[in-house]
Length: 447
Image (cartoon, rainbow, N blue to C red; front, side, top):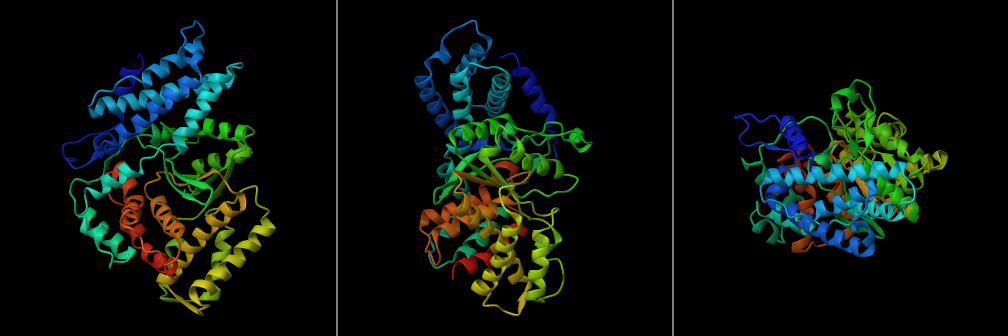
């Protein structure tokens, strides 16, 4: 294809490789090294074959430029891939750029219902239909002794902390090589299905921002939502479906553009009926409870928490929520957590306050899913492998129910949800500060 050489050039220029970085890898390189990308590709080709059977006109030779580009895209996707990592990465990048080009064309053209449906169904499949959990579980487990998962006498907190220590000791996970831009999907970070919460499918997404020139964005230019995510929401809107987007990014100089553009999806007339956006604090001084006081008056803490929940620098709420009613709901929630999980203790230790905050966040997300019944939901931040994995793992534990004795496979899945994103995308385990908070909330959920 005419753009392949250009793409490969971009890939090499964007990744600065130095001899001293022998244990570092380019972003998402583990997807291509581990065999997980092959699993993804097998599922993709199966899906494309099904779509061709549904829309046979898409592969008929014609002089129509859009239909020709669509046929070329389908043929490219079904082309066997060379086994080298460089070839697989270039193939993935080229495939996604071709898809984005098709979506941009269909945006301005009319009368191509088959192409529109195909692009909508493909984009929706990319976010909600890819099942990589078994391969990711095998990947993470291959770096851990089987005894970690087999010992039923260990509680989940012990399991997680032992896995963290094992993974931190491995020299091959020495971090990632820095590259320009924040277009994680383009770099190889693959969206996938994780598990279900009642009728809602919980999915993992890389950042949905298409931002290959981050430095310009920092100077004031506007980032854009990746075409494939926008098309997924457009298709959802046409199907009467909804998606809950839980954003964990910060509203600061670095991530503020992302927060704004994601929140503005709720006012985009083409997708607003299909998306609910909220933003939760995951990194502020209050979230980390940096106040050195070991014991804090619970009423004072909850009053501060109430103020934080209304602070637009740290939280944003969906336009679908009636704020007077939602504010009251949050106040009731704080009281319920205080009474239900902390027996209305007048003072809370640092560890208890940290667990209290995480419990409230968990309850907020489940309340939103119970209220709006979204078809899908994601929990994401600017890099989706730092702040969100611990949230996903806690939600998974919550889904299993209180006092659940996790099976061998569930223990593996819990560890995978927590560590796979960092290992695959950043070539490193999840930061200790994220893991260290988990025992507190797991203890509460185990009661």
